[in-house]
Image (cartoon, rainbow, N blue to C red; front, side, top):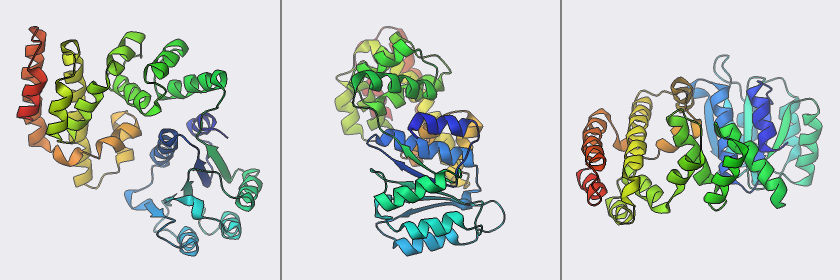
Length: 317
């Protein structure tokens, strides 16, 4: 099945015990894994992440076959899964009733080898396993149709605006994903105007991401390239981002699952997981301080200031 079909099945609570998530679009791969994680809703101790490059294959399957504590089950993600080549291990695990509550997700660039693929297809007929292809078609017409479906699964957007957004980013799904998440934060439908404002200049994205990561040198460089017409929009996005980062920071301190947090906040898991990269810089006091900085910048932008606004934000951040 492809990414859109996989997400559709998840939305209907149609699960498999095993997923091989592959394809040449890393954004789709990671988003599918994130959606799986969010919908699984296991206890935080039930999430296990391993690398097939660092752990021998035999040990990975032994881990999958191990009984979990309690009845909550486990969610095991195996990275670099192309190193899983022994289909006999997989068949033994899939047919066993030892760990019925365990979900195993193998993440790789490519589909499994021929023997493994045959075994997955055979198991798949009993709705136990599935290969999820996270790629986009090479044919331009079919690619356009798939992009529309993908973006509509990410948020409220019409087909023509979806194509416009994709083309506006130069076919960069990661930037499309960010734009859809930002529109989701404001609980609004994506429009051409909003897409243009969010994707108008890569300097906007560079400024926001650099500032959130406390890379002030890079942020200052990007600030000098941003049009004054974009000041208010950037400040809005930063205001939402630091609040989210603060929530993720508190969740991490208290051991709360990020997937549970995303569900509680009603936002994309992708957005929450991404915020984890810089959330350590945003405890309650630092969020309050930076909110004050953004309030001053917003006021200056509203008064029509054309220079120095973003530079002031960087200096005071």
